[in-house]
Length: 597
Image 1 (tube, helix red, strand yellow):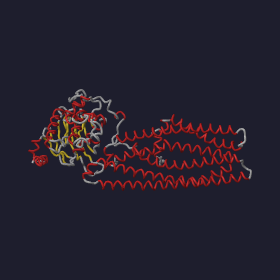
Image 2 (image 1 turned 180 degrees about the vertical axis):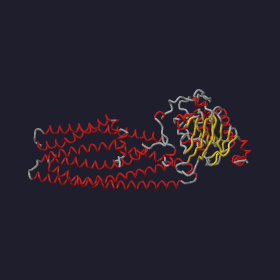
Image 3 (image 1 turned 120 degrees about the horizontal axis):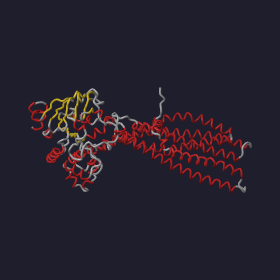
Image 4 (image 1 turned 45 degrees about the vertical axis):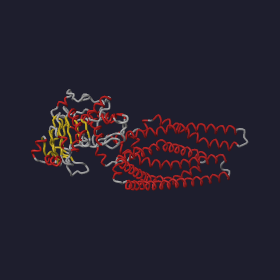
């Protein structure tokens, strides 16, 4: 069986925390050793002071030596504190960047079981624990270890018998307590998980605040959150109780050993076997050792909490995405643009000269959460280049899943999908998605200005390009009426806009991207009749020459389609133009009669 490597060790190894900042770690070590050396020299100075005598002429020099040691200790401690604090902040910044970058790589399937609130909890509370560990606890632990080793060494030099007795007794006491610390680590992990649950719940409720208030469920949600907080508190209480008992037991037993050994030393001074200065030196080193043991017991608790937090962060940092992305595919900024900056296709790339834009060949798919239910059931269809096709069918027919598969959010269980004559699996993912624009049924509006939201479709777009796209989407009028026009802040999730306005922003974003293939998922469902007519006219201007696939429950929006595809239970049931399908008196005709009646 392979040796189990702790998450903290794996993190240190895989992400080269030490080697990446080796200069800072080296300087911190130098400051640490110099500060510890100055501290360990203090008992020697006191021994000399006691043995010299108060009336001695050399007493002035002894006090000067103490002041010099204090100055060295102050400077070295400040230097160590600055560097270790810098390291803590830097390492945590790196972790947050790595966690967020890896989370962005995950497929939608990954977020079916992981709540965004939990991710945010790990990015905040867990990384704060790691920052405390690196910036403070490690520094204290290293200093305490150096002081412990130095103090024990000096005690052995001062009185080998007393020091040997103390070390033996401390080992008998500390080793069992050290094993108990492993249990504290498990409790820390559980406690952090419960805190993450409260964050996830709060995020979910706040994202749906209008629904909560509309159903007058504020008391219900408060009770749910209160219960989650109390559960987290109880887990934390168990952890701090165990840690408190562990700390108190460690300190009490360690001090008992030290007091016993010092009593033995006092007996030796009385018997003339040790000078008072040597006993003073021994006592001070014993105090240093006791302080070091107490500090180590405290930092050991911090280490257990940080180790539990690191396990959770490592899970996010090392989670493998369902869809592998090569290094050359991580950014699309350097990809050659396959589209001109107008509504016409650039006919130079060979892929755009393919006769078919999309082909589904015997495609079968089932979600992992429902493996026995086929959302795509041996689907076969072909969409020509430049055609305007529409998808209709009852809810659950597989229309939105088809869109998700075109964007490679999910992979077919069986069968093959081709985009522009190439197997979809052979397209670099970002290049594929750069070919496709989508207007989702539930438009996403970021907490930014109107121009930034539209420019999300093409980050390097000029102001005039944004205005042109907004006009095409019938959005220019209401955006111009906002207090700061295109620079107006739209609020979180676009709370300052109506549903129809959000959708027109989303359409403008897709128009600005100027893709070869445009996917419209109920793109006009939230528009009033006049706005819908104007957006349809805008799409009539934009869509010619570009392949488009429109999902529509409102069949009036697909009358201009070149071909209508009727899906049911993941299969292509019918296809044709509106008049043909009405004459066939099948599912489409039934849906149309229900709506138009």
